[in-house]
Amino acid sequence: MASPSAGVVAPDPAGKCAPPVGISNRLVLVMAVATGAIVANLYYAQPLLHEIARSFHVGSAATSLIVTCTQIGYAAGLLLVVPLGDLYQRRFLTVAIYGVAALFLVICAIAPSLWLFEVASIATGCASVAGQVMVPFAADLATKERRGRVVARIMTGLLLGILLARTVSGIVAQLAGWRTIYWFSAVLMVLFMLILARALPHEPPRPRVAYVGLVASSLGLLAAEPLLRRRAWQGAFAFAAFSVAWTSLAFLVSGPPYDYSNAIIGLFGLAGAAGVAAANMAGRLADGGRVAVSTSVAAVLLTASFVLLAIGSSSLVALLVGIVVLDIGTQGMQITNQAVIYSLRPDARSRLNSAYMVCYFLGGALGSLLSGMVFAQAGWGGICVLGAAFGICCLAGALFDHLRPVRRPLSSVVAQRA
Image (cartoon, rainbow, N blue to C red):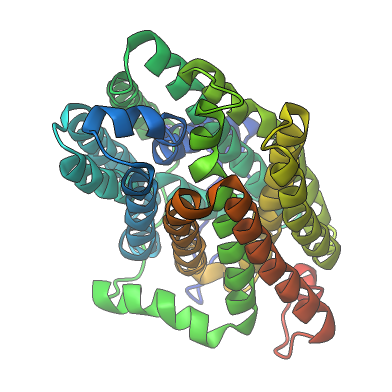
């Protein structure tokens, strides 16, 4: 049974959500760690792509499709699964997702061929969306004054999951082979399934809506909310730039002049730990209504990082600093975007999150797909040009926000200043 301090959102007589009573720091921590654990499934393969390529006897372009498949699967889960959070109790939905994720991770671990591994990666990505169910859940539980910071803390857990996924998978692959990490994660998913079944609070019954209409309404929000469209644009290009760099990084540092082992390649994930600080800072700026500043700074850092990454083809210091700047820009953009979109429709936060994150991960899938193709043809220099181009698209979105005011009235100060 969840602690009463966890917070419950109760319907008022008009059928809307009454103000939340708050969410305990303990529950925020549990949700943050669980979110990091499940989103890590999307990134275990990235530092191991050169090993997987050797195992299945394929080239870098074909192996890069693993990352694309996982991100496409995740986007599908965001579209088809996350909206269920506005229909069913998110406690039960979250627990079920962790169980399904464990099943598909086992299939990844035993896949005898690349095509089966890629199919299982799609399914694993689709079954790894529990964090995107919990983020709007936490936003509902939090008071208005703490919402940005609560979202930022859970997204900090997500960021740490991304960073540690690469580090842990590199070390595990070095010690026991690349398949072992998928067995490890399957066990972890079962563990969190049991923990969350006890920790997450119950919610009041939700109105019955046809599933097809629910999914369609997620995409319909993109048409109805101009601010959501703009934030989805910026998020998609930011994650495309991020994926461009990280998908090909293992190919760069596993060859000359670096020739690093799996364990050392995995440690590169820790270089982006500064993104954790960016997430919390962006959350504070969003709570204070300074989202235009946060957006602009994030876009500039994201674009500038590829200058450092280009120099990093032969300089380890420049490469590490470039990774730090890239992660700060990406996470700053992401936290700002989510704080803004949650202000639009409190009754539809799961669907808002679904619509936004579908665009976000489609952008990431595009970046991963192009990354493998560009690296095979133009090497790391081509990767940096491609990433910078995506960054410039983010800058264009930030400039558009400055030049064009929001036309529809919004009650939230955050949204008014977006």
